[in-house]
Length: 74
Image 1 (cartoon, one colour):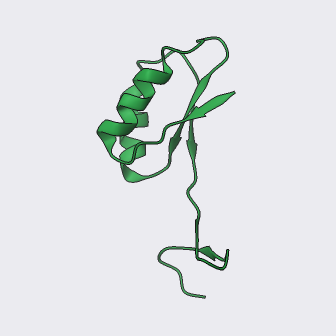
Image 2: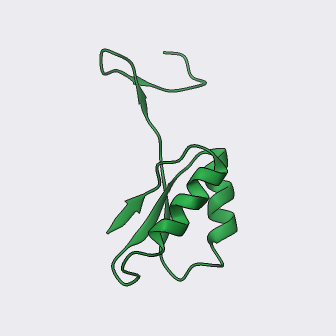
């Protein structure tokens, strides 16, 4: 099972990871958003933690439920 960080800044995500580390070490991995800040957290923690880390993608939807892709035009 993975627990998702909820912070948006490097500091918030890093602090989330530190809290998640206090959970059952044998059953919980950490899921970090694949943002610029999230990737910095992953690089910082990858050698410090003895638990799985995964990056999660972020999808944005408009009010009609249509997927928005930043940087692309449809």
